[in-house]
Amino acid sequence: RKEVEQDPGPFNVPEGATVAFNCTYSNSASQSFFWYRQDCRKEPKLLMSVYSSGNEDGRFTAQLNRASQYISLLIRDSKLSDSATYLCVVNRGGRRALTFGSGTRLQVQP
Amino acid sequence: SAVISQKPSRDICQRGTSLTIQCQVDSQVTMMFWYRQQPGQSLTLIATANQGSEATYESGFVIDKFPISRPNLTFSTLTVSNMSPEDSSIYLCSVVWSGRARDEQFFGPGTRLTVL
Image (cartoon, rainbow over all chains, first blue to last red; front, side):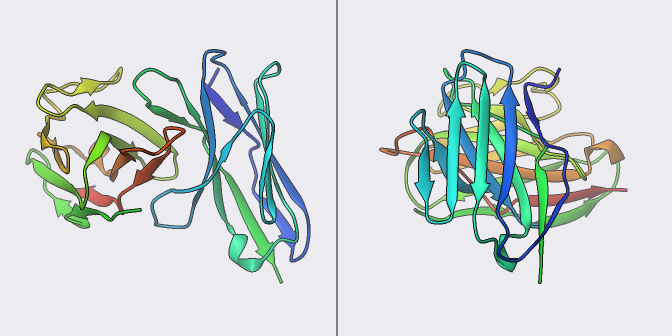
């Protein structure tokens, strides 16, 4: 079993749609959680950290359920510019090394 | 946040040769890491670059193949030794900024390596 698993994708949605990505992690000792965005042929960029209480940044909402070891990302009012691969990322703690999910590709269509 | 740069941005190399990739940050950072992203896949951690001491390697990666240096808090190198086509990948450094909470990591632009 992979340490971080994500929805397989790709997700093809129209502009303005709401889309949700899910992610599960296997290591219950994981301490920090993130969503990164990676555009084609670019480096990953931090989209948002995920807090236990849930957090929102504009159109983006992240949720963490430690009991279920589940992380989600909700994007409201999708824009064409949201098209990218979204990576669920977990910090195992200790040396602060990140473990990446395989990513979910989002394509927002006009 | 400060700027992370990598050199070279891309290279095409012959099998059996070695390539050294540089990662330069314009301010001091607490942690630096090296990742690999093989075609169509997600990122895999190679090692943690420790300042002034030997790097800490992940399972499946060894110092003889991927020697790493980190002489100070703003610079690191990764060498891909005795390359084979399987080493064709994007290699990325990442950093944790001093004073940043939540262990957030930021990535350099990557080095795209093709081995023939």
